[in-house]
Length: 252
Image (cartoon, rainbow, N blue to C red; front, side):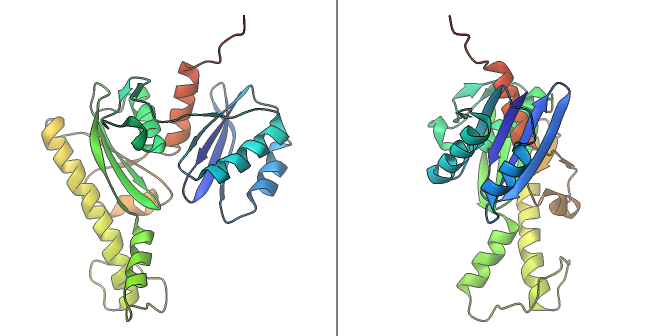
């Protein structure tokens, strides 16, 4: 078994990978009691053969998780850092390490599943968009605020936009709460649609697969004017592909 860790901006997701899929999985927000909750769950589980992680958080939180894994499982964590090429995917960035490892691993998962050519949209704290060619070439991407971060930015920069309640998503709003929520969600939807259409026209003969992942992907999907599908746990699945293709060296 392998313990896979996805340290995202908002929460930590994990999965215990066994033959045939996940034998256990979970997620916890960073504003919760991460050490206590994970210790409680992990101490009831078998010790994995290996622990592999991907992180977009600060080194202090990485160190906290390293200590927790060492305490519970007596293992170090193998951190995957973004490479120029791995698992059939080639990074488009001239400085490969500047591409978020979560974005790279999502492409690894999509390529391994035979979904390329495709556009991958990560809908979370940030909106990330990446295009992947059929041959595994990363074609580039975009980053923008996610829908909730967009709303927070708007409220923080204005004096009189102060919704009295969370807004609903509507085509036409008749109050500030709904107008703010709708404007931000539909702006994200419009950017996803535009990127997907442009990439399809330029690189896939007019048609490619659109895969959505992230904590808000299920809310965004029905707002889109293009066909898309949910692709859950893409970073964890990419980590498993990476781990299977990078076995631990056997000591001689």
